[in-house]
Length: 305
Ligand code: AMP
Ligand code: FES
Ligand code: ZN
Image 1 (cartoon, rainbow, N blue to C red):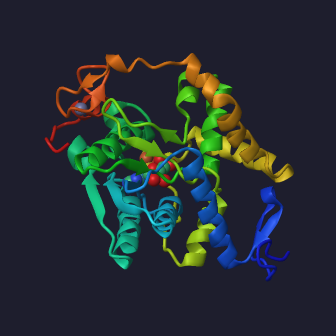
Image 2: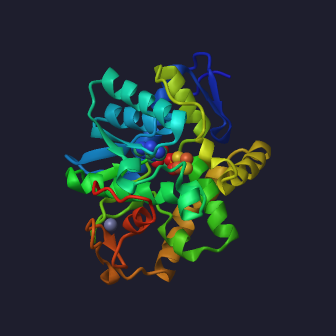
Image 3: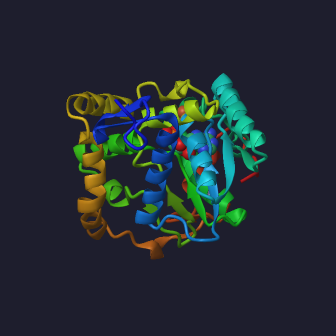
């Protein structure tokens, strides 16, 4: 197929748009999808400082690159989770990209702050590692952004991620999660604004973006995420998408335009119940925030939050 935009030979087909693009026009397409998402959901305003959470994977590195290309002021945040070689390799990729463009990369040692690594967390907290990992990420994305005066935190969640989470939420009719499944969560009550500008782009497109731009990323998935239920949901959605291209984006983008608001009205969270955590001052409905409760379970508590 010829490139939809310039009619040169296409190198990547996007079946859900019934289109093919050459390399340059594909990069343009990715940028425009992100620009559109940012505008549609009022994600970033003029002059704001953005902190992008970078894992060293394709999505977050492509996101950093695209936001810079769109002219935003963006620094990176890398969290060292203590997952052996996987963490070392992902750190190397995040650092390599930052250094190649002389960008600022803030680094935070989660293992040190928590008192144990994410790999050790199942033994200590008797739950899947993704649980301690998610709590730590939510905690540091917010606290590091607030401490360093960023207006917004951006993560690399893509269309495949969000459609799988949506499917999981719908299958369980988890109304509380559905009401919060927005690609832009407003700031306030001790929370910084959180955005997911890649929700119109697929995993495959983000890999292609990095390859075309020569951005090195860690290909390996997190070894702790084996058996994660979202992997099964992604496979199910891919099987459907394969037979009917466009279903995945219709499902997720349709949710945003047609259903999210009604779930928001159903589940009105009462922010007046929030108070500062006794230890780290993060907003929480309890005395201690989820992260500080987690760190108390470890063998030693290191005061580095
Ligand atoms: P995941 O939770 O692994 O699906 O990752 C979702 C998003 O969280 C990524 O696209 C990144 O933006 C961010 N993220 C994941 N791992 C890290 C990390 N170690 N440090 C900073 N950000 C991360
Ligand atoms: Fe969180 Fe693997 S990245 S458990
Ligand atoms: Zn706390």
